Length: 342
Image (cartoon, rainbow, N blue to C red):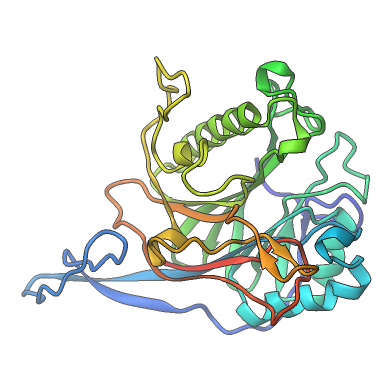
């Protein structure tokens, strides 16, 4: 679907201009690519090697919590914490930012504060004019990237029907859940896809495990069926499940996880995504849930996953962190930030 440009409540794409430095590039030499998450190499270059330039892209995922408050978690209402949310985003200056739980009007407010970004966003309900509907908005640096394509789909038996949500066969979702995606292109350089999503929480479905499993299946199918299958892709968001759990393992390439009926794997091309945080911090059990009331963190449920199709060089994760903000919690989630060399 080609993007549209509108302003105001219920926008699909808001375009705002600003001044930010150009993104970094890294020069590597083929065929001796040193990929941090695959293998190290120190092979010398030889005559005839072809120098190639690979882009670096910094991606952030952040569940900002909606406009209410959560006293049990110590999360105050939006007016008391919104400046801290903006501060976290500015301090990391991501090229691409995926938000979860951000309501339509909150996205518009954030764009007013972060005018170097444009956004693709849509409320999860059938009526796009509902301004207090949650989104899975994607923000991107407008002076760095051009929007090539964008779209949305819902986790249901009718994924292209706005506001739809799965029946019992889909885990019995209580409210809509959705994904927003974009295809971005850096000027005269790399194009890539970003899929931003928010899987079902335990209290949001009759069978939350199945709801997440069916959502992961649909997400994989949509990624596999993108129009340019020779381009890199990211899947980011709040997946409401810790590392090692199904269906996160499905997204990482395990099509038949233990305990899940998988006599016939889904008919989609095989690909494997990399968990950026785990690639940089193997064995680290740091969490992304944030509790200002107790000062503790919960499990890691927020992810930046990156994949690539052969024969492109495998992506290298040059940095990944769970971003703190002093001792405070502007949201009940901490953002995850990763810099990827493509």
